[in-house]
Amino acid sequence: MVIRTHVGVSLDGFVADADGVAAWDLLPSYEHRSHGIAEVLEHCEAVVMGRQTFDRGLSRWAGDWPWRDKEVHVLTSRPLPSDLDARPCASPADLLRHLQLTGLMGDVHLLGGARTIRAFLDLGAIDRLGVVVLPMLLGRGVPLFGDTSQALHLQCQRLHPGGAIELIYTPA
Image (cartoon, rainbow, N blue to C red; front, side):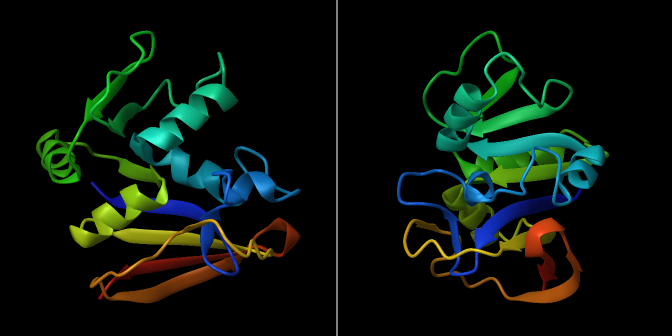
């Protein structure tokens, strides 16, 4: 099992604007499976996201939930809609233990948001931190990084449409 992110970040380090709209959604050249997302999902067996990302996904994908063939885990203490096959979990550490015990063969896509990604970084649980630097400045919003003690090294990079650059980091 490999836990990986693939998150769009503005040049000034924000994953969402001040209203919580994902940086991906502000990029004109972005489509649901563009910028390397299709490759990530191809190898993904499970998805982990925070409650805000889950709720935004519900409203955005109304009736066309893109993760129907994946295990979906949501960091939340509130109940989830019963019509979707999603597992709530209140603690990042408990969720990590659960994922490690399930015997997943494929990757876990740590979808986000920023607090969820930072929580897994703090646990030392991210194997591949994929960051797609988007050609925009948001000025303010939700930063990807706060204080973290996790040291990371750049592994590789590639270009995507519209000037976006993907950087993949691994733990030091």
